[in-house]
Length: 586
Image (cartoon, rainbow, N blue to C red; front, top):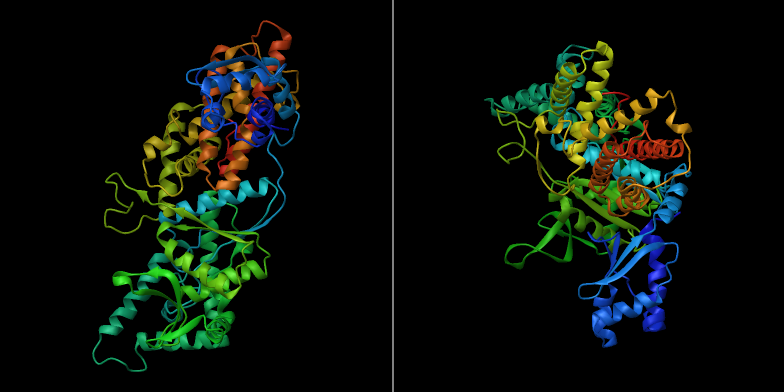
C-alpha cells in the first residue's frame, strides 16, 4: 500500500532512464507540490547540465517516455522545464479504497527495533513545573508513534532520586514524622516539603556556633554518608520518599494523559553500583586521567576559552560521582542490557554539549558501537507573554499541575457557555479532554526545539490551528453517524471522487501513512499535528460543499459517509499518537 508520490516515483525514474539512458535510472525525480497540478517533476532542471540540453527539451523527452495510462489525466511541461502531473480521479479512488480497507489506514509496519526513550525525568520531592511539559508530551508522542510503527519502545523515566539533597530530605522526614500531614506534602505539594528542609539546612549552616552533632546540616551530611553506604534504615526512609513522590508523579501523568507508569522508572539510583567500575575501566584503559584531583576524560575537539580542553569529569576531587558518570552507565546499560538500536534523549537543548561528550566517551570505551544511534531530541522553552521563560509573578517556575488545572477551568467556561444542555458530569469530562488536549496540542504543533508563547485563550479556541478545533471536527463526524444511527466502523462503500473537495480530501487522506513514518524517522510530532490540521480543514471544506446525508444519489451518499468514516479513523488515530483525546461530543 503506497501513497501517490511513492507509486509514481519508479514510473518517473523509468521514464528518465528511457529518455536519457540507463546511467540515469537512479536519478532523483525531484517531486514537489504544485499549485497547478497534483505534483511537479523538477528532474529536468537538475539533469539538464549533465546531459547538455535545455531543461525544457529534457522535460519533453521525459514526458514522451512516461507511461502513466490510468494514473494521470494531465501531463504538461511548464515554465523552464517543470513537468506537471494531475492524477486520475479513478486512480486516486482506487488507492484510497485500499487505505480504507486497511485497518492501519495506510500506516506501514517497520522492521522492529529496540528503542529506549529517555523523557520527563522529574526530581523526587520536587514539583514538576512548566519546564517538564515539553519533554513529557513530546517524548510520549514519539513513543506512541514508534510503537504504532511496530517498534519495541522502552520508556526510561530517568528521575532524580539520588544525591546529596536526600540527606536533608530524610532528616526532615524524620523530624516531621512519617505519616504526618507534613510528610503528605510530598504527594500534594512537593516543593513545600523540599523548601522546608532547605530552610532548616540553610539556617543551620549560618548558625553560630556551627558543627555540633545536633545541628540539622551535620545530621543531613551524615545521612548522605549512610545512604551511600547502603545503611538499611536510611534506605528504608529513602524508599518512602521515593514512594510518596511516585504518587505525585502518577497523579500528574494521569491528568496529562501520558503513558508513563512506575514500570518505566529508571532513576539515577539504579546505576549506583556501576559507577566505581565505570571509573576504574576508563582509568585503567587510559581514557580517563586525574587532573587537579578529579578523574576526567579529555576528548579531541572539545575546547573552551583560550583553546583549553574541556573535561568530562567522571569522579570529583572529593570522590563523588556526577551526572557524567551516571550518564555513561546509562548509555552502556541501554546498549548492552536493553539491546538498543536507537537511543532517544528528549531533554533540553542546553544539554547538547554534555550528551555529545558522554556519547563520544562511550564510543571510545566501546560501549556505544557504530550501529547504535543516540539522538538528542532537543527541547525548547515555554515562554510567557513577555517572551521570557514562563514563571509565576514571584519569579518562581510555574507549577505544571496549576497550569493544567487552569486550562481545564478555561475549557469548562467555554463548554458551560456553548453546551448548557449537557449534564454536569458530561461537561466536566469534555472540559478535561479539551483543556488538557489544548495544552498538549499547542506544545506539539510547534517544532520541539523552538520556543513558543503560552497563551491559554488561543489554545482553547475552537477556531484556528488548535487542539479543540481538531477535536470539534471529530465530534462533528460522530454526530453525522448518530443522526443516521450508523456505526462508522461498519461504513464501507465504494469510493467515488466526483467533486473537487472530495478529491482534495482524498489526497490528504492518502498522505497519512507517509507522515506517521516521517515522524518516526525525524522525531518531529509537529509534522503530524500540521497534517491533522490540514486534514481537518480539508474535511470542513468537503462538508460545507458536498452534502453527505442529503446527497442526490445513494451511491454518492454511501461514498461520502465512507469518506467521513475514514477521516474519523485517521483523525482519532493521529490525535491518539499525539496523546490527545477525542471527545464524543462538543
